[in-house]
Structures are given as structure tokens and as C-alpha cells.
Image (cartoon, rainbow, N blue to C red):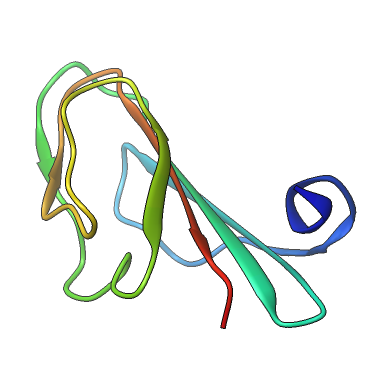
Length: 79
């Protein structure tokens, strides 16, 4: 997507071992979540609310509450 390739980048504060990257362009937003640890972790409430899953390394839903170890979840919110 254009937002993923060209959008403004922000890094929301996450507890370790989570890494979150947000990109936004012309109202389109992409959220990339990475669990860099080996244990499942809970995601902050409403972090992915409103995002539709584009890619997930594990079975996922629209707004995941947890992320398994060494997993990735990428979602899009078109505003």
C-alpha cells in the first residue's frame, strides 16, 4: 500500500518485546506489530481497534488481543 511504502512513520510506545510501527498517508493507516520474544504477549487495549488484518503469521482476528511469540500482524485502517 502507499501508506506502508511512503507514509509518515511513528513508533508507539510498547512494552518489550513488542515493536509497533504506524504509517499514515492521506488518511490511510497501516499498523505493523511484531512480537520479538518467544512468549505470547497481551497487546495494549484498543491498539489495533479499527484495523483490518492484511497479513498475520498466526490465525488472527480484526483486532487481536494477544500476539504469539515471534509473530507478526499487519493491519490497515482506511479511515
